[in-house]
Length: 623
Image (cartoon, rainbow, N blue to C red; front, top):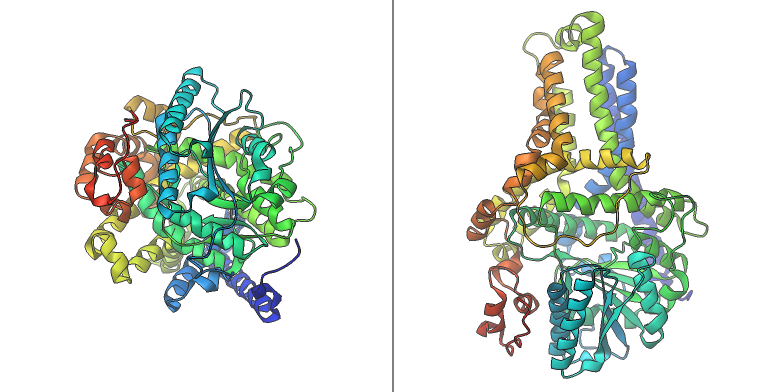
């Protein structure tokens, strides 16, 4: 267990990782200090008020998350373009070029589900099986549909569809369906149950979500890398969004794709063997996972106590504590997931993750975990605490304007800013800081698009530079509107957690649907109200600051029409016809996606698509 691959045995290589981490730490700390100093300088020209001191503290609390994201993206782009052979610089393990090495291990492909659309999950798992068959190495794999569904109609449909698949498959012995009557410990308990029942039979486990899909080639590559590196505990693939017809999903995953690629590459450069695990589309070494990664029950009552909801990063930390490496393969190929079809469904998923990540507060003192493991847990927490800190910052700023007006009978601009600047002058320092923060927030997506634009072959996969930039422009506006909506939802939810509010574990909505105006108002009225409060407050007490608040105010006020428009057929069809924000797989569907009917091809067309070069799928009734 304590052995290390050759690259870590070398003192020079180990020292190199230490140097990388020190460089990254220095960059982050310098950026945090620079940003905080810049804001303090803007505020301190005429002396600091209590409001401004509080705002500086809140601003400083958010600079770590902002700085880490920015430098991950910058380093990621530099790595991707510094060398044609960049992968060993972020994944320095054995076997990267051993594409034809023999597979001598046994791997289970497991898909835990809970009240999902049965035909979709079976069709996804069938596509994985067929892709494994196409590699000629399917004998090394078995597939498991692990159901925690508690609705009798769904259980009956899962059973029927799986039995039909087994009857059609030439090797039914490799297909397994297990239904748990009592879903103790939810998804974590589902995986634990698999490990107890079947874990002894396998070396590795590929974990899939109900909406995810992986190609046989990628699975084979992950298995070969695990075989070549006996101390590799978890290897995470880079997950891409599946082609989508929903306008919301198309635009969202277009931005996520570019941002995640450069961000993940940059983080892998310095995190090295203590990388991320996202809970699916990854391969796990079963012996240490079963022995060391069983999750504890947190002290206290839910929502922050009890069973751990966000299991993935905790399992990564426990795997690393046991002496095994956790790494990521930051290549976009053959690893997919579906994203929520509407803003409402996205928020439900995000708030469930929020509750799970905030439970990590109670794990920061876990004995034996490495310092970087604690940092990983802290970063997962900061992903969600950033939102209430930003809103507190803005509300205190607005409160200062109101306080000046009520106590001095004049506006802050008349009292301080106007005399300070003089007639016609512009607050250049504040403007520069504002633009800097904005660019740093969106740096992963901006640099991700730049990465593609600089590669002619990749640019062509998106339909050319014009299509790429048009999609980036649309996604930029989309992101500006989405960010304050999501941040306020997170803020309200986190406040509610202190009063016992919690998210229940339910099946997710994955099908396109229309969000009615009533549903949008019911769920998003706080955003509309907050946008109106900010707009009215600035208009009355500091109208010259309306332009600075416009990105947040417009996003909040537009929440309801935004949610409705991007869920309807009009924009969805227009985006699909024009290939707006189309990902490469929509233009050239891989076989696995053809078999599952994604993109503009319907399932019945995919069955008989001659260009696939593969035998047609049998008609299983899965429409």
